[in-house]
Length: 243
Image 1 (cartoon, rainbow, N blue to C red):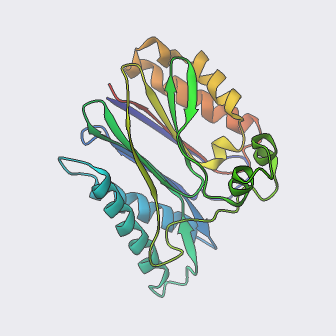
Image 2: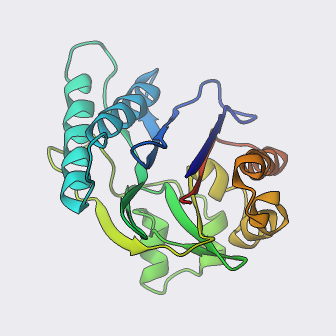
């Protein structure tokens, strides 16, 4: 398998509160987008990514293992917030992909960082944001197009570190030969509508199957496009070719 990750400050923010980790040997990738005052956001995202990454370095990954890792990450973020180092309240989103068997993978998330599957030149969103505007879309009060530009689109309803327990969405999915997966923070998905993400991936060299050489091109095209669209937030993404 091949995994490529990118994270960028963007064009507005003074510091990067996103964090990434992946391991091709154990077959997982994780991305977090932190929030909080001062340095709290980047501390929260790094703590969550490190906790989950360590927990997934096992011989067999299943939904119970993933859920336990996210629980441990939630506890770690809360511990840091209460540790008296003046970071104050902090939290983080989290999204992960993990290989769970032959032709099987697990996708889990908390917050509005997203996972997508790319198959047959089409990009399919696998996660539903834990956010105020997504709730309004689900209730028929807002269209997806309106949600894309809504001023309150970044208000999330679920995150690591905000409560003693957290309820991640964890699903096991199949994947087929030729499938690719994308994880990203809202710094990418807010800047580029779904159609643009799909168009960029359709133009990227990775669809030829030469994954080792083409993945960096696809990742860099997405990152550049988000910055060109404004880069109003930190931009992070991970591309996964299961192999």
